[in-house]
Length: 59
Image (cartoon, rainbow, N blue to C red; front, side, top):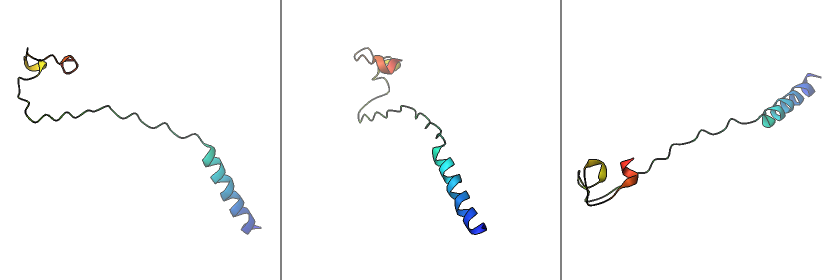
């Protein structure tokens, strides 16, 4: 009797676990890396440059 109960119990536990809702995946942050070869310190708006407009970097 014991040899029948264990596989049935194992199948029941696996079926219950497979139906359980999974936790939602965490949202990853949006990170953008900008690589500019010849960009100086004062070449963008947040650091005082008036020649180029960089509204998204100014936020």
